[in-house]
Length: 548
Image (cartoon, rainbow, N blue to C red; front, side, top):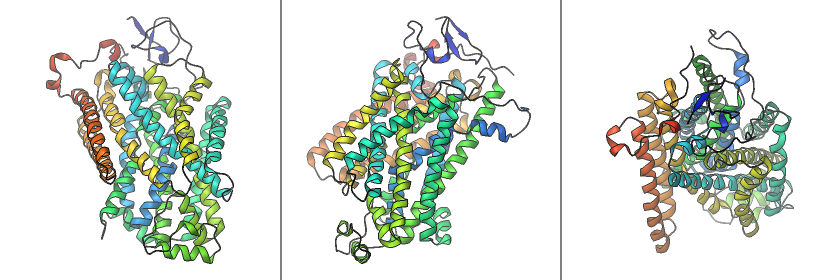
């Protein structure tokens, strides 16, 4: 196939209009450009490139990292935070810190892939994996998005229920969330920066809401710092261990890797210029670090509030307090001496019982902001993944409608048939579902960022190859432990047999991805008869050499 480079250094077919049109998988006739989030590109100011740092340039690159960070603040994460505080006190804050740092390193790989190649992870997978593995990979990532989306939409519905004092049922809250998500998603028609500013506004609401709870409860600052920087869990048992695993699983989400690799394409970068690419990578990493630091602080607020106020509390204590304050929700807590179990719904209720109605309503506002923002970014993830893997050329509205419908129908079924007070079991299942999908984002991102033929001078070095491989191995092992604990607690022989059969298929596909990853990392002896060699056109060997 004859290819040529455009002004941005991207590959395109002769006669086509832009880098997004190039597809080794389907080199058909000229198509109209896809319009998802990128109807405009943010220009980068031309400061002196010899300067080590420019606030003007950092501001120009600010946006994608904060949208990415919203996945670290979705209702699933908030629920994991409050359960961590209620079950282990401040003792697992260091796990949250470590998971956030690991998340930052993985997001760095995602951003570099998008900046250097001009393609996001789903597009790269489309061009590099054979048809059957590509379709399986797409289905697995879609499952992760559906699981995350259900948590986010139901989180919004719970917030509406709390704010309306139960007048808005769960199913109605889901419908409201669907409608307002459609409205908000078209904000980018008014400008990309306005859309990013709206997400910044929602993050600010979360910071103020959960920050208010933090100030109101006034946790012991010494205990907060000790829990954050002393990697030890005195007196912890299986419950705390499972919670620690749950924290890692909630923070590192597979669809977020795909999302971030796409969001960074929104800046106007000349990819033929090595200095511009290097500069973009630097500023994106700084921006992502700031964004994840903000998300970490918000998560700490939630953990510390429930650690200070509710760690070691029993159902009886909470029930008595709710009765004394005249709460309409005291029946949620049985009159026994078992340890208090909370979720985002019960968490709001107990805050209201102990710290007044204002604490409940402000909590609900924070949950609503978390759910609404993460639902929107989840929709973007769905669009990028579907477009990239399937090379869709639909209208914008049709794509939004399809990606929304895939996740909304199961959510509506849950909302209709499940009571708002009994959603913890479903949340555990969704966390397990997402944990199982992690290898399908982490292995491909390490594979492709290690390919010199794809990343040129920006391919992973030996340290990143080894370090990245070890980090991914640890994260996947932790999440698999979480899955095993969940399955063994089901106490059903039929489910055990089904899980065993599913595990064989699952591990076979993961082994295939690992095999290709090891070859990309340089273990060439595994490439039997060249069967895993990437075709030159697909590998984009014709990518231009970088200009000085």
